[in-house]
Amino acid sequence: MRLLGIETSCDDTAAAVVTDGCIVESSVLASQDEFHRAYGGIVPEIASRKHAEMINAVIELALQKAGRSFADLDGVAVTCGPGLPGSLVVGVAAAQALCTALRLPAYAVNHLHGHIFANYLGPAPKGVEPPPAPFLCLIVSGGHTDLVLVETAQAQQVIGRTVDDAAGEAYDKVARLLGLGFPGGPVLDSLAQHGNPAALAFPRGLTRDGTYNFSFSGLKTAVRYHLDAHPLDPQLSAESLHARKADIAASFQQAVVDSLCDKTLKAARDLGQTTVALAGGVAANSALRSQLTLRAQALGIDVRMPPLEYCTDNAAMIASAAFYLGEQARVRPAALRIDPNFAW
Ligand code: KG4
Ligand code: ZN
Image (cartoon, rainbow, N blue to C red; front, top):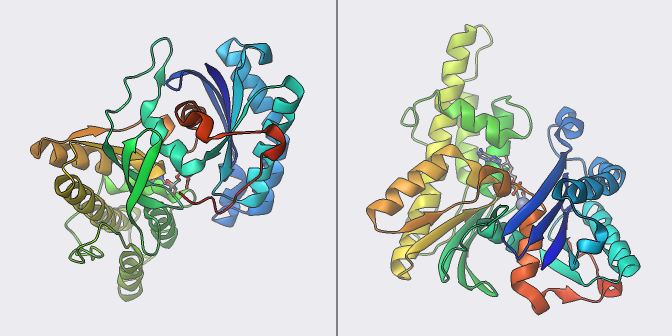
């Protein structure tokens, strides 16, 4: 079964062709970073307008790269939420038009379900062996930090979540405090590799609360207080300034990674889970990937993580989710609607 996936929930316009939920024939993405950078964050009106400008070209390129035409498709899967209303509506309108004109089935996909299914994706011709269910999936993105028990591909249960900021949001805010630009996560990740993760003792939120929830706003505030008390002196040499920023980045990152690994591995042990999967933009983080792998190995737990390109937003994961969710996601094309607060 070959599906076209469409994803426009935030600031990336994406389309992909995926066969049988796991074989990625093409995955195309038009990033809008350059248009939002000057504002230090995503401007919803700009995001919506750029999606409208790019959507047709991105869909056509996805088909072209896959060597397919509209006639080769068995359906169209689209992200309906959660996300920015003005962004979601562009992808949903495109999917609705295609399904109506081509008489194809439509699939309405929750973006967060999509992130989980990034773990089911591999390159053509064979794809990848899906993670064995049940497994625990840690979704860490710009808007969400959710710990999910995936009982089967169709049945998921959220067992923990952030009580304040999402992990990616904390990365972006701390990157802004350090003057690293937008988007902050990847830049902070590289800078942290030059710093000492033990240089500063930043707090780990909710360590002893007995839940699988997370908290990152205290950590972000601690970084701000540290910078208020010890400002980045512009008189310092470029080298010293870089070294100070790198120590702050590495210490902040270690606090995030410790919190994420502690809670995830505690949940895996408590619930007897032997496989843990990562998903979402922060799953691209080098320290999280390596430290979770090492710590899990020591406990006899397998770790699965998507290739970097499928951690951050993409449309292949949306097509995969639609394949595995099947009838659960299928809707009449005329009934396709955005759902900006799409709950689990
Ligand atoms: O999943 P995603 O592409 O979009 C949302 O659904 O939110 O995640 C984007 C988030 C941003 O906050 C970005 O800074 C963060 O993922 N991110 C990273 C890295 N790459 C992306 N955070 C830490 N380290 C990275 N390497
Ligand atoms: Zn996302």
